[in-house]
Structures are given as structure tokens and as C-alpha cells.
Amino acid sequence: MAVLAQGRIGAGAMREQAKGDLSAEVFGDLAAVEALWRGMEADPAVLATPYQRFDWVAAYAGVEPEADLRIVVLRDAAGRPRVLIPLVVAREGGMRVARVVGAKHANYHMPLFASREAAAMRPEDLAEQLRNLGRRTGIDVYALSHQPRFWDGAANPMSVRAEPSPSDAYGLILGPDPESTVKRVFSGDARKKLRSKEKKLVEAFGPVECRRAATPEEVASYLDAFYGQKASRFAAMGIANPYADAAVRDFLAQGASVEGGIPAIEVSALVATRTGRVFAVFAGAVDALRYSGMVTSFDADPVVSRSSPGDILLHHLIGEQTARGRRAFDLGVGEARYKSSICDETIALGEVAIPVTLRGHLFALKTIGIARLKRRIKRDPRLMRWVARLRRRPVAPAE
Image (cartoon, rainbow, N blue to C red; front, side, top):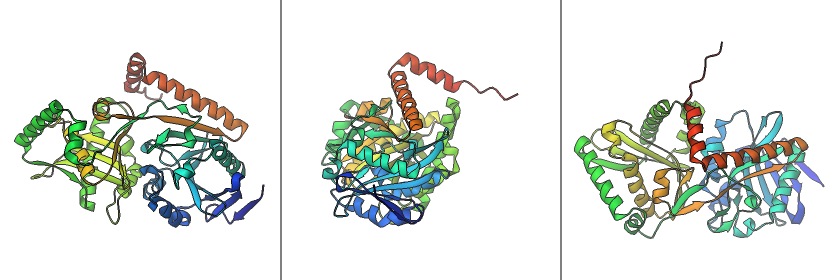
């Protein structure tokens, strides 16, 4: 199989002729692939989640500085890009493991397909492309989690033989207008209760408003409130706070930047209009047609929390997203009461492991085994209670 090397991976791309008149390229830096990537995602025919937007990946790139960035692009015989897969490659347990960019901060790790036609490629061909590139670049295994079975009605070839993920995601289709959508999502009784709770919040703190961060100052203010609320929450639960990491905070700040175009991450808050106090925060990855919830928090002050500020914010947010023309809204991966109460769609996810070497086969077996165990635990209330107790158990100091 002929290989044409175009300089160092870190500075350009490696191209390899593939089966079925496809060719594969691997880019090692974002600048080299930015124009191509933005061109693909701007095409109305593109099939991708908000987490494969260039701006989202670029914002996240600094979170894993020890990992090597690898952007895989598959082209057809005419040279048109058909598939783009953003990866990071890092050493884990003595092996080189490739994962989709975003880790647990991305709900969906699907490749970016140029069109539905491109997504209809044979799963075997896609897997073989990755194996060939893995052999050339020293990758032992691809561990590609959170692959949607379907996206926007089209099958994801990456997930055909996937192991079911420990958790699925939950979403809803937005209607043609805010009023009818909110009425469909929230029952009459639920809307009545939310109005009553919002009234009590107003009585205690004055007028409140759902605001989307539109200035750098609002982005910083709402994210600061989120960090404080999450720190209190995690401390009360006795578990580590992932948002204490400066790199993660830089990622969220960069992703939420409102300086030009649609930000990769939209941040909204329920705010007291007189004082600016933030009662709840919701942030999501976005593209032109979808809002995908990433993080949420609320003020744990009993005077505030008894009014369910997070539910109030979500109620307003769904109406606001509908009014802005988005047609899909999801609350991401994982089980939660507030998700099941409003979502009418289960987004089935799969775990994909593609081994390249013998060591990679062993890693893949372990990965799939862990996924099965986690899925079993999440579907057994007794096991979930046991795991929750273990998480809260204090760690003994080292002697």
C-alpha cells in the first residue's frame, strides 16, 4: 500500500491511498485543517453533532496537553472530504490509545460526515481505514465512546457493532413555536407549579430573568457562578470537583467566547435583574440547529433552591431555543429525574473499540468488559447505592 508523507505529522498531513477509491489524511495541527473543517461544517448537508464543530474542538485542545492531536480526513476519488474524525492519542498502560476529542465533556463522539451519503459507507471500510492509519502511526487501539446509533435520522456506521454504552442520552424535538413546544414538554400542572415557584423567587429577590451570555463580562460572571455552585455541590457529595482544573475552565471560557459567530458553547443563567445574583446556570454545545446540554448548576441556598431555579431556567431555555429556530434540544448523557420528566427521545449510544495490535486487542476486551459492568450497575438500584457509598467514603491518609 503506497504512502505519501507530507512532512511531519505535527506540521502537515500524512496521506494514504485506501480501499474503495478513498484516501486518508492525518493532520497534526488545527491550523492545517481549519479551512477544510469549517468548509465541511458550513455545508447544509453535513451530518455531525455540535461537539465536532471546529470551534468546540479548538477550545478543548488544551485540556489534554500530554496527548497528540490527530485529525483524520477521508477523501473520495475526486478529492472531496467525506469523513473527518478528531482524535487525541495518548499513552495508557504502555499502549498508544486513540480517543475522540472531548473525553467526558462531550456527550457525543460521532465522526463528522460530509453528507448522509458519506455516512452510508460500509462500517468495515471505516474500521479498516483506522486500522491502516494505526499501523502507520503507532496506534495500538481506538477507544471511541459515546457513539450515537443514529443522528438526525441517519445511521452512524461507527456504531454498527458497538457495545451498548453504560448510559444513553435524552433529548426532544423542538416544535415550530415556543408556546406549543413548552406546552408539549411541560404538563399544565408542571407549568403551574413552575409559575408558582418563580413567583416566590420574585417575592424574595425581585424580578428574575433568563439571560443568555452575550458579552465577555456576562460569560465570566455566569461561569464564575457555575464554578461556585458546583464546588459547593461536589463538596457536599464528598467527591472531587472536575471544574477546579484550570485547563477545564480555560476550555469553557474559550468555548463560550461570544466574539464573532455562534459560540461553541452557549451559557445561560437565571438572574435577579436588580442585583445580578445568579440562581442557576445552564451551558450547552450548539450548532445552527441543536442545543446539547453540557453542564448545569443551581444556588443551594435553601431560600433559592426550594423554588427549583434549575427547572425554571430549563423551562425558559427550551422556549428561547425554539424561538431562535433550533429544532433539537438534548440534556446529554446520564440518568436524572429532570431529564426523564421532559425528554421524549432516548439517544442510544455505543462503545467502540478497534484494536490494531495484539496489545490493542487486550485493551479492547477490557474496555468492553468495563462498559458492560457499568451498564449493569447503572440499571440496578442496589448496586448504584453501593457505588454511591464508596464514592463518599473518605480516603485514608498515606502513612
